[in-house]
Length: 193
Image 1: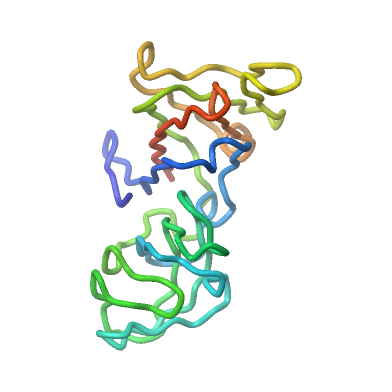
Image 2 (image 1 turned 180 degrees about the vertical axis):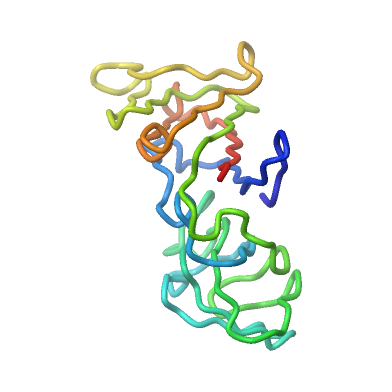
């Protein structure tokens, strides 16, 4: 996870690598049109990590308002969530990688958010392990156990290097699921603004 540059355009990079993909996953509004001026990668996320919460860095004293939470692995209820929080800094103290915030541990310091108050305009998607079924029209993809089985476009590690989805309508309606029920895919998505 982090900041990536593709063709001179900055984007937020996220990786799904979990049983979350056994169910349909949509991209959260926090990443589609983020309102935080920075983002922080996190691990050990717990249930109190929610939009509107003011967090303070345990080491740095950095203060920030959480503007959005995107979980890419684990669950907040289980205390093992990983992902990205979009934040608005409320003081000038920088956050420190590896410090504890209430309800999570940071994996990075502040990273400038290239999508601050902008709509996502494209997605770059790659699959590193197994395959996914996806849709970009708002319909719901299914996997091998779904009804009907295997609905949606297939994106596979073997046949595709990178898939780009362009346009707000397609980006906001993007949904994905493991192609084969229980076969965990690893999916990388860079959201471009």
